[in-house]
Image 1 (cartoon, rainbow, N blue to C red):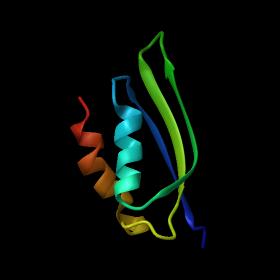
Image 2 (image 1 turned 45 degrees about the vertical axis):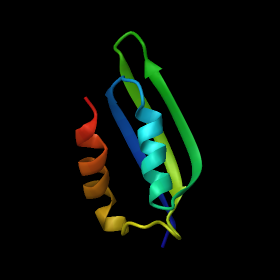
Image 3 (image 1 turned 30 degrees about the vertical axis):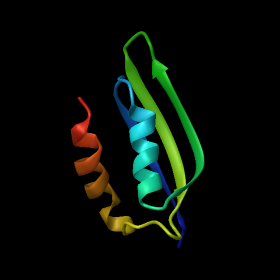
Image 4 (image 1 turned 135 degrees about the vertical axis):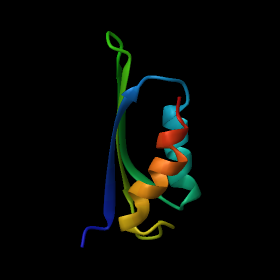
Amino acid sequence: MNQNAILLIHCPDQKGLVAAVTDFLHKNNGNILDLEQHVDKANSVFFMRVEWDLKEFGIERTKIDDYFGTLIGKNTK
């Protein structure tokens, strides 16, 4: 089984998105392997792809979406 996870994000651009995502991963013992992000300035849309190691990650693979959505996704305005 692959020991890495990949999160793809697109949402309205706002300050603090990279910090929120990387803080979530750090707090749950995730080791970031690759991160790419950019903003479509014409449409003010933020895009991010982040891959991290799951070996010591504190959230079960099947629960990551629920935790991230609740803690980060729904708290951005």
